[in-house]
Image 1 (cartoon, rainbow, N blue to C red):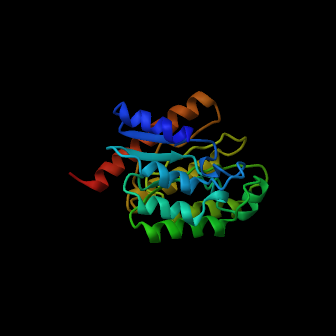
Image 2 (image 1 turned 60 degrees about the vertical axis):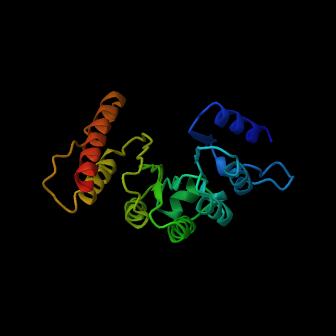
Image 3 (image 1 turned 90 degrees about the vertical axis):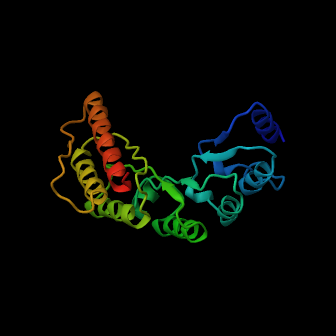
Length: 219
């Protein structure tokens, strides 16, 4: 009730977009033992009168249930966008990360969301260079990018020692995909693991992503 009251107050003040924020926001209700869950909360908030829209982040795949997908699909006030961090495309790596879901389960959630809401915006986070990651594990992560097709999704990358070669491959893969297969792109590759240089080079690559996106959309 306190969440509903706060949203009602914000709507009354004229706010047009409200974001439900949590580390694992869709785990809401799991520890309340009163029948509460995230899907019920979304449905209840979407019934509040007023001209506004709802977003939420960040979701954890282990608690992303069918009723959450149904709540998003059936309520016009809920933005048709899901930020669903995959972190890795390899079930072995997901187990090492203690993520509590498999590659197959993640892709099942994505397929259900796309089936229910064609055109839904999906974004994700990816970690490369996690301790113990093999080349095969890394290739599974590249593969899941194509399968999920998170167009222009966020690329939040944790810095791990020795990950630059693989990160460069991801940078090329993303640019190649966005360009429609053109190989003559001038891509700024990473050269070292100095944090300041890394952040600057990622910023430059993000700017190139935006240019490619604009070009693909057209005037």
